[in-house]
Amino acid sequence: MKNKFLLSCFLVTISAFSQINSPNGDNIFYYNGAADVTFRFAPRGSGGRAIVHADYNVLSLNFGNDFTGGTRIGNDVYFKDGGNSSIASGNFGIGTVAPATKLDVRGTISVWGSNSSNTEEHGQIIFENTNHGVRRIGNVVDVFTSGGIESGITFTPRSYNASTGAYSNMVVAMKIDSNGNVGIGTTTPNNKLDVNGTIHSKEVKVDMSGWPDYVFKEDYKLPTLEEVEKHINEKGHLENIPSEEEVLKNGLSLGAMNAKLLQKIEEMTLYMIEQDKTNKIQSEEIEMLRKENKTFSSILERLNNIESKLK
Image (cartoon, rainbow, N blue to C red):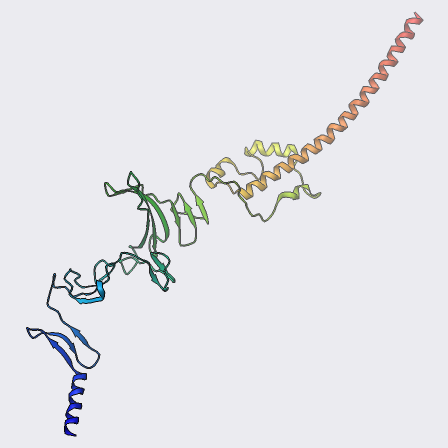
C-alpha cells in the first residue's frame, strides 16, 4: 500500500513538472504543469529568436538561417516583427478560406497615413504595371485619400523609368472630392462633373423640366420684327440669348441654351408662316392687277381703233 502511494506521488510530480537539461545545465525543454511550455536552444545565426516550420515537418527554434524576431512557415511564408513580412506563393485571404486572388478581402479595408492626426499625411494605394517591356517604362495610378487638406480621391497617372529609378509626368488626371464632385483635368470641381478639355461622345442626353412649345400657343405674344430689331440695335444680341461676355464668363448650359435656340427657331417659323401668308395675298393682288391691266389694255386698244376710224 505504501509503495502504491509513493508511486502515485511520483507520477503526479512527473505530470506536474517536466524538464530536459542540456550539458551546460540550461533547460532545453521545460513544462511547469500549468499552461507554460518553454523551449530553449543555444544561440545560432545572429542569435535570433524565431520559430521556423521548415521542410520535412521540422519545427525549429533559432534556426541556422537568420530569421531573427520572425516566424517562417515552409519556404514561402515569413512574418517579421518590425520588419518585412512576405508570402511568396499562393493567395492570401482575409474573411475567406478560399481566396481567389493574391489578396482577397471579404470586408472593409481602411488605409491611413502614419500621422495619427490625419491632417497632413494620407494613405496611399498604388496600382502598378510591372510589365515594362523593352523601354522599361511602367504606369502607376496613385489613389490618395485624406480627411484633411487634400480631401477626396485623386488619380495621378505617372511614368516610371526603371533604368533611372525616377518617376515623371505626375499630373493629376481625375479627382473626386468630398462633396462627390468629379473633376477631369481640374482639381477643383464645382459640379458633379467638371471637364477641362474636350469630350468626344456619340450621344449626350440632358433631362429637361420644360420645352418651348408654348411659342405655338394662341396666347403667346410674338414680338414684332420691329421689336426684335430694336433689341438687337440696343443690346447687340437676341432677346433671352446670353451675350458673348456672359458666355465667356459663365459658359453655356446645354439644356437651357438648346431650349432658347429652339424658341427662336419656332418664333422664326411663325414669322415665315406669316410672311408666306402675306406673300400669297400679294400674289393674288398682283394677279388681279395683271388681269385688270390686261382688260384696260384691251379697252385702250379698242378706243385707239375707234379714234383712228373717226379721223
